Amino acid sequence: FMLIQHKKINTKGMFFVEVDGNILAEMVYTMPSPNKMIIEHTDVSDELRGKKVGDQLVHTAVEYARTNNIKIIPLCPFASSVFKKKPEYADVLN
Image 1 (tube, rainbow, N blue to C red):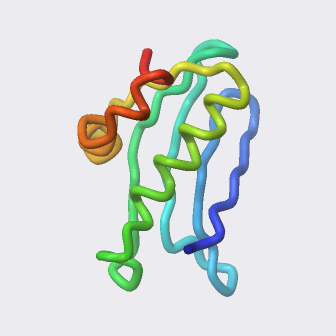
Image 2 (image 1 turned 90 degrees about the vertical axis):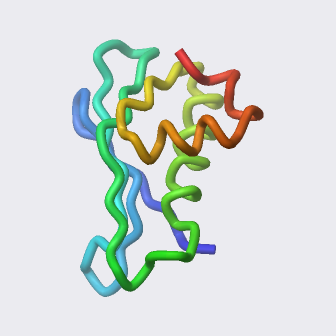
């Protein structure tokens, strides 16, 4: 299981995996309002492909959304596909 970090500046943020100062996976979002998160894109480096890191990024965003009473709009095709596969995440969908 990778350590997923979170960084938020104003209305933009990202969940990411950093190794030796390099970001190897990231999921970028914007927040048009305090209770809405739009997942814009997910990027996983070749060395982490196939390790389900993208799924972990989405899972971390879902946990964050639940904790902070936020609804998610997954514009990113990858994130959207994860939500389709995981009905248990439906509670945070906008």
